[in-house]
Image (cartoon, one colour):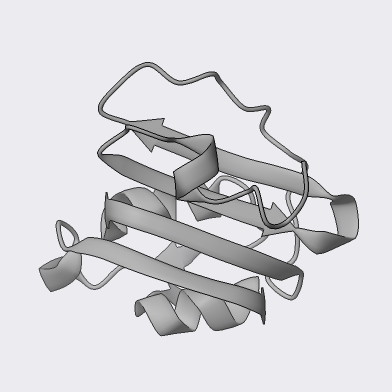
Length: 109
């Protein structure tokens, strides 16, 4: 598997909600699919927000995105209370996790 296969279309085909993150420096795919049974993924060692990634999100709530990322990074992520249940569809390649967090409207500290 490579960066082009670590996305919602490949990792969670047929699932209504998904998030997939390709981590370039470790050649790892972190993903979660909701709405149906999906294979579990290992919880990786906590990483810096400065790692380079690809990000694919389909119809996931901002709260679930923040929770998924926060379990894998150093530091805290904050979600604006008024946006907790907002559903997000987003895709970006070759950016840092910090840039992705900012683009999604989350706050890292």
